[in-house]
Image (tube, rainbow, N blue to C red):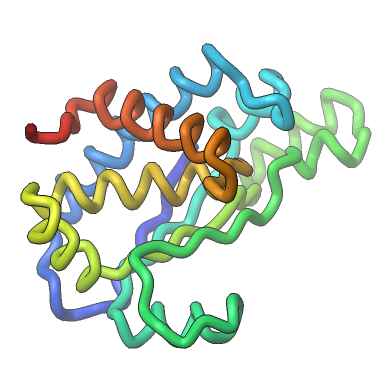
Length: 183
């Protein structure tokens, strides 16, 4: 899965090369975890397509911006740490029912057009939560990215069972990419 980064804040200086490398490793961990144990709503073939041809937009923003977005889209007038917007989990080219040759030609022309979702992360919340939980900002940014990705892919934590599954997967994915939580 390709990731398009957008820095829309000025409070946190980010090492973009490090962030891109971290998110690539986390995406690989996400792929390994989900392909090993696909969720009931996402068949393995769809997951393979998402990780092979899908793209994801990740915006790092200020508390002010995420508060505005949260108010507009969720009617909650406060800043939050991460927002996720799933867009299209079904490969739009495959959904068209075109012959394989036509699909190959279309994908050759624009292989990154399929945007699976958008994740918006508050840099200020990442800093505050890293301090609160006693780990680095890099680890918190990794956590928020994985949390957002799982939401984009249909996971939630509204019930105890869903929370257990989602948070368990988060821990596994972070660990696969080398982001273990300090005791």
